[in-house]
Length: 69
Picture 1 (cartoon, rainbow, N blue to C red):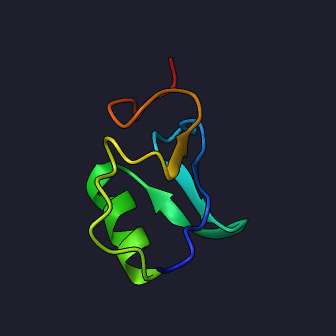
Picture 2 (tube, rainbow, N blue to C red):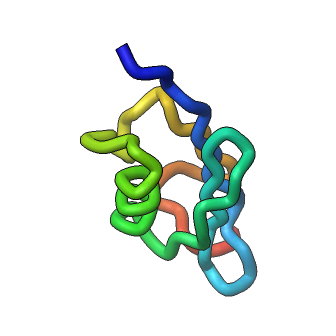
């Protein structure tokens, strides 16, 4: 069984993007759930449902929030 790595999606930035980290490493700035899924795929975490996965910690709102509130 592959080791599950902690994924953190930060609060939306003023530009609307959200920083995505896996194991503390920044993977990039996502502008939607598709970007998060692509970053995770590139990190070897394929087939992760970004909307429901308990692997992902969403800070400052869930996968539907992409602008500061």
